[in-house]
Amino acid sequence: MKNTSCFAMLVGSGLMYLQSANAACNVQSVAISSGKVEVAHYDVLSPEIRRLTLPNGFSLGLKIEPASPEKLQQIAKGSEGRAPTEWVKISLYDLRKSPAKELTSTWGPVNSYQGYGPAGGADRVVEIGEPGIDLKLSKPKCSS
Image (cartoon, rainbow, N blue to C red):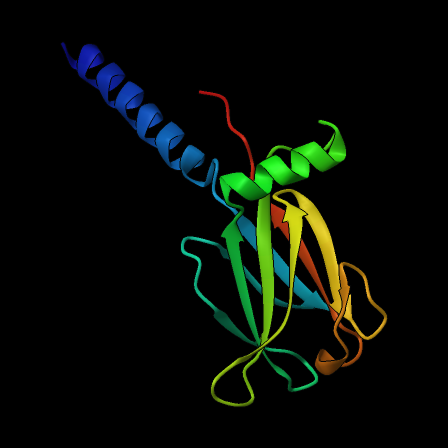
């Protein structure tokens, strides 16, 4: 009886571990860096503007939201089916003044690198200054 109880506890603990290990599955995350400095890393749980302060002092707003079904159809049509199936809209804001000023909005795959700054990348955004920012977007798929 004692061995059965221990086995049940181990199995139950294993199931709880598997559930928590899969908690990040299908969750969009982003790591933001400026030069060699990581500015932030977080899971995107809602499409609201996230306030970030870059190493150069710039107050940046970052908003990441899922692409609409219409936008996904437009991307698929334009790429003749070769594009990734999941995309996000990435919007950058200047938060130094109220109301916030949108600097750019671009689209990117949920698993991609996107760069912004005076030199360009996904888009040229002079306002944020050197060395700009890099976004590493990640949305892991997990088996059921």
